[in-house]
Amino acid sequence: MQPRDLSAHAPYVPGRGTEEVARELGMDPEDLTKLSSNENPHGPSPKAVAAIEDAAPTVSVYPKTAHTDLTEALADKWGLDPTQVWLSPGADGSIDYLTRAMLEPGDDILEPSPGFSYYSMSARYHHGDAVQYDVSKADDFEQTAESVLDVYDGERMVYLTTPHNPSGSVLPRAELVELAESVDDHTLLVVDEAYGEFADEPSAIDLLSAYDNIAVLRTFSKAYGLAGLRVGYACVPEEWADAYARVNTPFAASELACRAALAALDDPDHVEKSVESAKWARQYLRDELDVPTWESAGNFVLADVGDATAVSDVAQREGVIVRDCGSFGLPECIRISCGTEAQTKHAVDVLNRIVSEVPTA
Ligand SMILES: *Cc1c(COP(=O)(O)O)cnc(C)c1O
Image 1 (cartoon, rainbow, N blue to C red):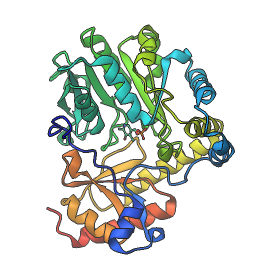
Image 2: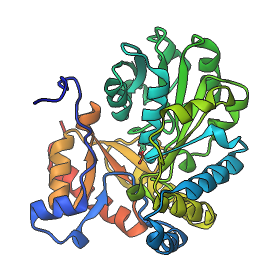
Image 3: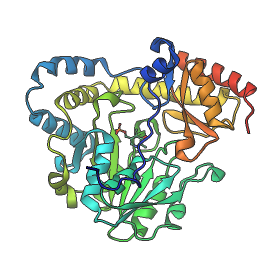
């Protein structure tokens, strides 16, 4: 017995985890500074933790009310109809739901390169394929409608990541509007705002009332500090919002995830503090790292260290885990997540020492 031919399906490469690295190096996880997965260094809101504890005894029941409550709270937050909010296990789950709803076998998606690998993985699971447009390092990862339209050839879905992972660049609203007005009628623009809270630009969600070819992804994994619970959502235009009922996995987000997300929405101070802290850290990383970096609107900074594998391996042995961007197609770059003030300063000390010792080209 064998599964179908999966040779075209590359496995997702996550940032390295603390436990994993600690075991490998025989270190105490407490001694490691994990800045590899853009998680919230301040953890979840205490209100979310309390909600999880409160809900624990109820997990024998399917999450029907919690699902409805969270959907309504999000619809309220964004001024949408509840049908327009597609809850999912992480924003990754929303990528799957949109792919299920859009792709026929053999259809293509268009995605940024470098970029988030799950877009093409999801397309391939759903018997489609992926083509890339450049978000080019030579142009400081500037995002424009032109660079998308240069290669656009009627693909069914076009992914736009803003702030962009791994560079932190943004797609200005005027460029998005130009795209929405330029692509063919059958093309859906998927605006991935996984890091939207950290940016100064407003969300593209308000464009849903004017355009029926834009969907926006948001998540509780980053600014809200709930990555371990897996809860995110897509906001979609009213015209085709009812597709959710036909494509979602029943009870898409768990009871604990929904309850925690509701509590987290009720604690804007925690999000604000997390965003302020990330803004401080990304500026500190840019000011203090002795290597080229790029302006970031996310909770991370991309840095050109010459040999990302060499630098990240040495950093890891010294207890600082950063993301080697080789898997993004940037073997000379590392991505450093914004930590607490102490973590960020420590990471800069360690990385500056390493880049002064490791040959950088
Ligand atoms: C983290 C991330 C996501 C989604 O993560 P989930 O944990 O599945 O919500 C989506 N897109 C990008 C670009 C990301 O970095």
